[in-house]
Amino acid sequence: MTTVDLAIKNLPKKDKEYRSYAFALRADVYVRLENIDNALCDYATAIDLTPERIKLYERLTNLYYQLEKYSL
Figure 1: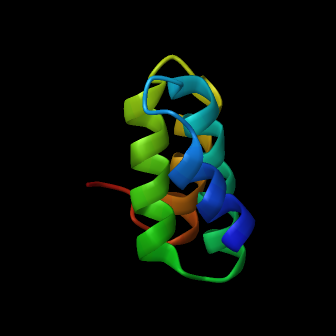
Figure 2: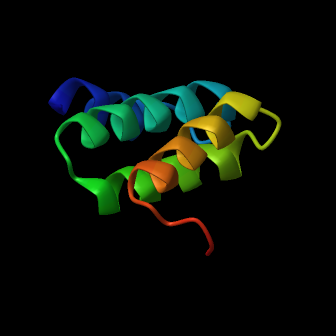
Figure 3: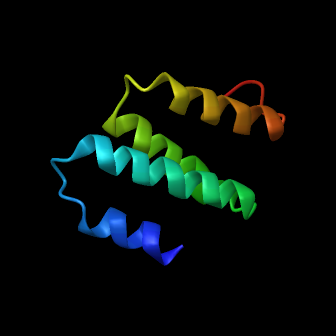
């Protein structure tokens, strides 16, 4: 995980698109590790950075579905 963490740490704040990809990637890893709270947080951050990326909403929705959280 340290490679993704380093990417997030070292990417310039203004480079929102690459930061969003890094947060989404880390969220995917967290999902596989069953670290759901961190995955939810990273998906939310990725969406905040690039709200036009529909795929991020799909991933977040799928995670909520797996958790059987049908309403927020």
